[in-house]
Image 1 (cartoon, rainbow, N blue to C red):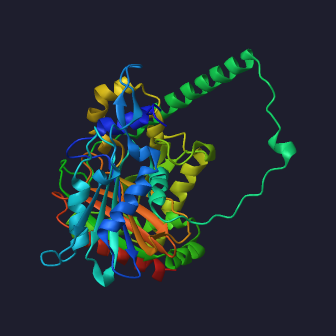
Image 2: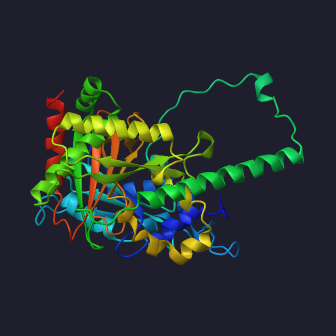
Image 3: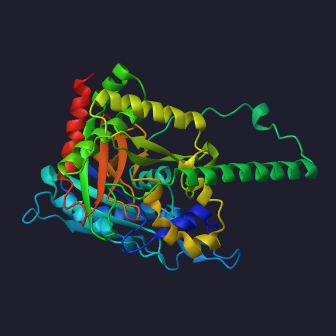
Length: 441
C-alpha cells in the first residue's frame, strides 16, 4: 500500500485538524479476562498485531503532483510499541475514572507527521476488567475501516470456508473492450458526476441557515465523554410496535434525550428541531475495509420540539424514508461526496475556514459504526463493551456515535468540555427517553 494516494476527502480531514478540533475517531473497548492481566505482555501482543496491519505502519507524505496532494508511505524505522501505552487507573480522585481519563486522552491531537493512531491499555477497572482506548485519524479511514483495524488487533474469528467457484465460472474472462468504449465510459462517468456534483452543491447552498443552534459553542480543546448502554431487545420491541428500523428508534431516543437535556439547561425546546448529520458509507464490497474514506451523508431534523415519543419516531421514520429514497448521492447531506471531488490544493487553502461553517448546515453528528455480531476476544479475554466516539466538528457542543454489539446498543457521547461541564445530564436523558419510548410500546 506504500505510495497509495490520499483521496481529496482524506486530505480534507487532515486540513480540518486543529488543537480545538482534532479529527480523530476514538473507541473505548472493555474486556473481561479469565485471570490477572499482564500489561507488558498485552502491549507486546498488540504491537505484533499492529505491525501486521500495513495501514498502521504508514504516514502521510506530501506529493509533488498534483498540487496539494499527499500519499501514504512506510514510516522510517516504524516501531509499533511507540504508539502503545499503559495506564493504571486510580479511584482516589474521580467518581468515574475511566470516563475522566478517556476524555483527557481523546482531547490530545495525534502527531500528523507520524502514523495516525494511538492505543492505550487501561487496567485497574472493577472486577479485574481492562480496556483498550483506540484512536485513529479520520484521514486514515472511515467508521467501517476503523472497525477493520480494531478487528485486526483482536483474536482471530474462525470463518466458514467458501466453496471454490466452478472452473468454468472462474475461468470466464470479460469481453474485450475497444478504446472507444473505454473513452465513452470515462466521459459518461465524468458528465454524470458533474451533474451530481452540481446538484449536491445547490442543495448545500439551499440547506444553509443562520447558525443559531442551542448546541453550538465556541471551539475548545477540552472534552468530556459519556457511556450509555441500551438493551437491543427493548429497541427491537419498539420497532415491532411502531415500524421503521432500529436506527430510526435510536434517533428517536436521542431526539427525546436532547429535548430533555435542553430543557434541563434552561433552553426552550418546543417548536424547535436539531439537524443531525448522519454519515453513510458508500464503500462497495470490492473496495475493501482498510482504504480511505468512502462517505456520504443524510441530514435529518430531530424533532426535539415534540413531546410525544411515538410522534417523534414517526417524524424521524418519515424523514429517513425520504433520505433513503433519494439515495446517499443526493441532497445537502451528501457534501462529503462533494468534498471528495474538490482538488486537494483547494482543501489546503480553505477547508479549515470552511469547516468553521459547519453549524450553518448541521447541529451535531450522529454516526453508527457497523459491528458484526460474532463474539470477539483479545488474548482470550471476552470483549464486553464497545463505545465509539466521533470527532467533534468546529463550534459543535455535542457529537454522538452508536455501535451495536451482541445484545446491547452502546452510545458514546463526546461534548465540548467548556460548554458542557459534564455528560451526566445527557446520559441520564438518553436512558429516560428510551424508557419512555419502550413504555409507549
